[in-house]
Amino acid sequence: MISQLELPKDLMLGAAIVTITGRKEVLVENYKGIIELEDSLVKIQTKNCRLQILGVHLTVEYYTNEEMKIVGLIDSVSYEY
Amino acid sequence: MFVLSWIKFFRGYVYVHLTGYATERFLNLCGSRNILIWNLKPTEDGYYFYISVDGYRSLKPILKKTKTKARILKKYGVPFQLFRYRKHKVFAAGIAVSAVLLFYCSGFVWNIEVKGNSYLSEETILTFLQNENAGFGVPKRNINCEELEEKLRSAYSEVIWTSVKVYGTKMTVELQENLLPEEEYEAKDDTPEDIVAKKDGVIAFMVTRTGTPLVTADMEVKKGDILVSGRAEILNDDGEVAEYIYPGADADIIAEVNFYYEDEINISYQDKIKTGRAKKDYGIRFFDYHLKNPFFRQDYEQFDLTEHASQLHFTDNFYLPVYFETYLYEECQTEEKTYSKTEAAAIAQSRFEQYLANLEEKGIQILEKKCYDRKSRSEICGNRDGGCL
Image (cartoon, rainbow over all chains, first blue to last red; front, side, top):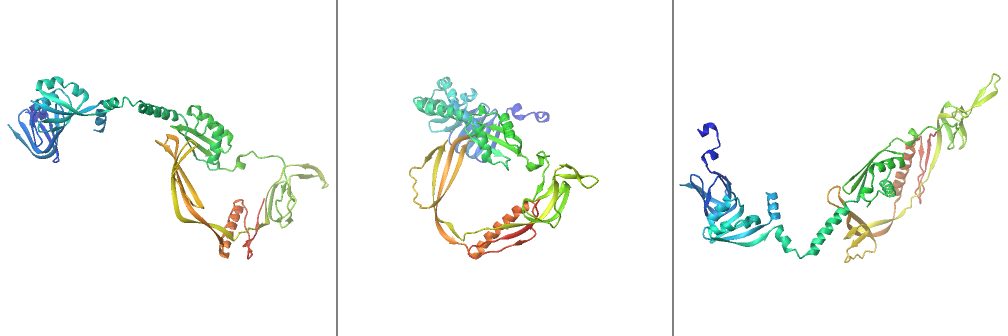
């Protein structure tokens, strides 16, 4: 239905958009909150699932209500319920 | 991004260490209340992050709610620096004075550029401007560009178009000169005149338009002889002069004339040789006041001094009366030398050639040249034949 109407999925489903640039930058849009923040682990709550980013020297370059940018050496990005 | 960091700097920001019970909740609350936090770094007992001063002030209820503590580690930005230097009044006064001085200096002309002049030298124009009280260092408000343009045109007849512009502290004077010789546009003199020989010679060719010819071709004439008289005779039926009219003389006359040219070249001369040793000195000039390096010493007996000054300017048009000067002292030695005969002859030849070129420029045709040179004083003489009006 949504794909037929060509509506933006992030708005309709509340889905998070994760943009990974290279190995050192992750931009998460449409997130709900921060669950855990450590040097080697970032856990982010989105509407439907949790996003887990593993890496080394992870820092949040900035975050606002809608988006957050994480920099550091990324090892993995995974989803969990 | 660069602009954003400047805004942050001007409004001030702090580096904070956050510790306590529910630090993640604190971060989420900040996010939801649109308090910007950047460079968030996790540590074992909390977080380090940067936050704006305004953001930090609105943190209080959040800190209370999440039972956390925020400690300022470092302060950045203009508001803190102003506070820190609040007792350095002289420093602030210095900034203010230099700003005022810069503003004051920007009201004067510190650089003049002259464009498009070929007959008139730049020096002439600059002197003229100085006399008109519109030269170097004159307040810009005293300069009336249109008036200057008019004055420049009326002062120099060869200038047919001018444009005076003042941009920043630089004045640009553009000229257009009349490239035709002055005779062409000067009104012709109508008073009757005779044509008189300028030099001794033999008339080769002659066409008279008005006036009475007194000489014919192949006649030898002396300097000062009247060639064509501006007076014409009107004869009556008996062949006697009835009346004189004065139409003026106009004729094309070509005569063969001898020019004598002599030149002397001194075969001994002084040659300057640079020894290769050189020293450089730097200085600053403000108006006419020179500030030189007091520690600079040079002990050359003879030297060439090259001075180079560059004017301080911020853009192409904003010049200030401050110059950076470089002095280059190059040691040199003079040596007595003599030209060899061939060298001297070559110099004489080139000078003679220059002389011939000058004559040819005047419309004189060279028919023949003869050269002699003497031994000790190399000398080349040219006998030349040509035409003159």
